[in-house]
Image (cartoon, rainbow, N blue to C red):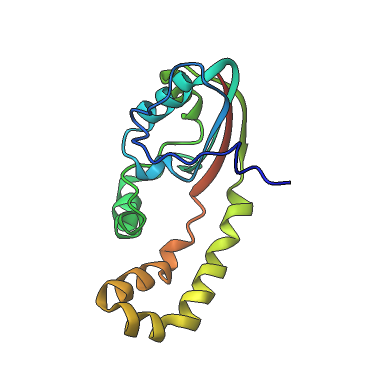
Length: 166
């Protein structure tokens, strides 16, 4: 069965989507919020376009518990590599959602499961390091070196899946 006539892709600003309020039954943002700066603004916009009976689902990178500033400073090059400006705390996520007019239905700490991808990324980076640097230059070298950093596996950092109602 084809759904070509039922699906439409729209490129738009997530802070000001070109949809009327109460348009969708649900919305999800998979690993996008950390890269957009204003999490609350984007969550508020998702809440606006979702019907009052709908849900908003997001996955996000978080601090499992508050991390000391000196560690965050050490992690800054890695976070910058992924264009992550800030990391909310897992415990503070309900307040973040509430600030956008959303109510928590469920918060799931997927840190252990998500952390399994880092060694896989590192293995791929090691395997293809020379070819990627040859093809993409110094910028690729810097990116790969950050992925291969021991700091890339940081147990204080985590991954949350949040389900919220409007």
